[in-house]
Amino acid sequence: MKFENILVEIDESLAIITINRPKKLNALNRGTISELHDAFEMLEEDPDIRIILLTGSGDKAFVAGADISEFAHFNVSQGKKLAAEGQKLLFDFVDNLSTPVIALINGFALGGGLELAMSCHFRIASEDAKMGLPEVSLGVIPGYGGTQRLPQLVGKGKAMEMIMTGGMIVAGDAHASGLVNHVVEKDDLMAFGRKIAGRIANNSPVAISYAIKAVNAGFKNNKKGYATEIESFGACFGTEDFKEGTTAFLEKRKAKFTGTL
Ligand code: COA
Image (tube, rainbow, N blue to C red):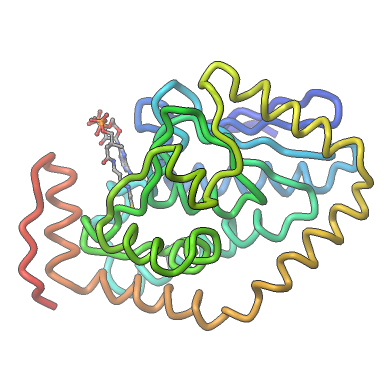
């Protein structure tokens, strides 16, 4: 399989997917989402692959979010479709893979980037990683499962604060709140990921796939939450605040929100 936006490396039972748009801080455009889907599907179907590591290229970012330039002009129905399709193709898809996926967060994980990391089965961050859901600063809300998965991981109050402020937390805080399992020095991130992957690969892949299914089943009663997220995400696309927020980002200026619907 040939990819333009990602790299896939296979080392015996381990696969490493690297999102590879460093000039755009690995922002998730449509092509990247589709390639990630294809790569995860291919690796899931390969019985020799026991574990997948997901990381970003360059030394600055894991993923700095969904590609704002692609959706800034979208209307309500396009916004809804963006969230619904993205969740189905990538975020829910990864969450429900039977092959374990570990996110190695090597820098910024913002918006869709943090949502992607949260879709992985667990996360390891480098010391300089910064995480957040800044969508409200653009006049929109997280639309790739962030309103559901963040409270599951860090609790409702912390998630509310992160979503409302749109602020970033540093790796140490992310570790303290359960968002990431480990924080390691940047140069050690891949080696540490490989070490944990090696331990997982020694165990029964069938048992692991059942374990993932069972753990996930406990979080499946929030279907309405995801549906509400998609509806609300779409609704934002009809507001003046959304136009102002995304335009301001692309014009590299601070947004002036009026609260006008
Ligand atoms: N979508 C599209 N492009 C993005 C992007 C995104 N989410 N995040 C970064 N980029 C682009 C920038 O536009 C810039 O492109 P340019 O060089 O063609 O102008 C390039 O990536 C580098 O980013 P830049 O902002 O110059 O880097 P920085 O170090 O000054 O700031 C961030 C880093 C992460 C703080 C900043 O890029 C940012 O706030 N990104 C958006 C985060 C966000 O809101 N994500 C949620 C989206 S829903």
